[in-house]
Amino acid sequence: MTDRYAVIGNPVEHSKSPQIHAEFARQTGQDLVYERILASIGGFEDSLDRFRAEGGRGVNVTVPFKEDAYLYATRRTQRAELARAVNTLHFLADGSVLGDTTDGVGLVRDIVGNLGVALRGRRILLMGAGGAARGVIGPVLEEFPAALAVANRSVDRALVLRETFPGIAASGYDDLHGQCFDVVINATSGSLNNELPPLPDTVFASGALAYDMMYGRETPFMRFAREHGAQVVADGLGMLVEQAAESFFVWRGVRPETAPVLSGLRAA
Image 1 (tube, rainbow, N blue to C red):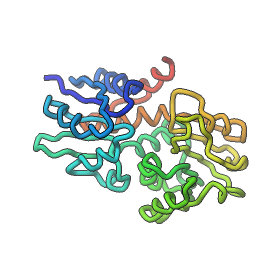
Image 2: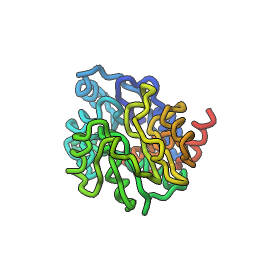
Image 3: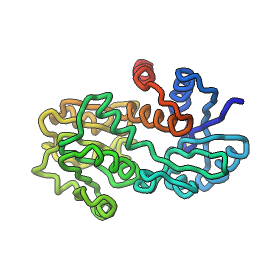
C-alpha cells in the first residue's frame, strides 16, 4: 500500500517539496506519494486530523503553522523543544505524533557540506529573532563557532533567544557598527517583501559568506552582500533540500542523496 505524506501551509502552492520528495522516493525505492494541503488560518488542526484519518503518515509544516505543529505533537525531539517550532510531524502506529524540526540541520548541511564553508571558529551573525532564527541556533552552535550574534529590529525579541541559548550575543542593528562577521545569515521575513535589514556597510569580513534563507530569486540582502564585500552569496534552496532529506529520514529511516536533487532544481 502506498504511503501518503504532504506539506501543509498557507500559502502552499509554490512549494517545491512534492517534487523533492518524489525524487527522494524514486531514488530510494520507497512507495509513497507526497501532496500539498492548503489549510485555512485557524484550520490547521482540522486539516491534519482529516489527513490522518485518511491514512496520512506524516507532514512537513511550513508558514504560518510551525508553532501550531509544535502544540499538535504529542512527543517532540530535543531540537524541536529548543526551537519551540516543528516542521516535521510523524504519525506513529501507536497513535502518538512525533514532532521534529529539521531546518537547522538543513542549514548547516547546506553551508558546510554543499557550499564548503566551515562554521567552526567563525564569527556568525544571524539576522532575525522569529521562528526561522530560533529553529537554527541549536545546530549552528553545535558547530562551535567563535561567536554567534543575533540581531533584530526589536532587541527584546533577540534577548528572549539569549535566555534559551546563553552563549549567543543579542543586539539591535545599530550595535553592529564596527563589527564584521565571517558568515551572515538572513532569517528575517524581509526578503519576502523585498526589504533589506538595516545592516552597516562593513558587516562582511574578508571572504565572508552571505546566506539568505529565501530562495527562488535574488533578494535585496543578496545584492547588498555582493556590493559590500561578501565572497560567497547563497540562497536557501540547498537548505530546503537538506531539511527535506532529514524529514525523509525521520519518516522512512533512509537517507537520500541530496546533490542530484539540488542540481536538478538549480537547472530547472
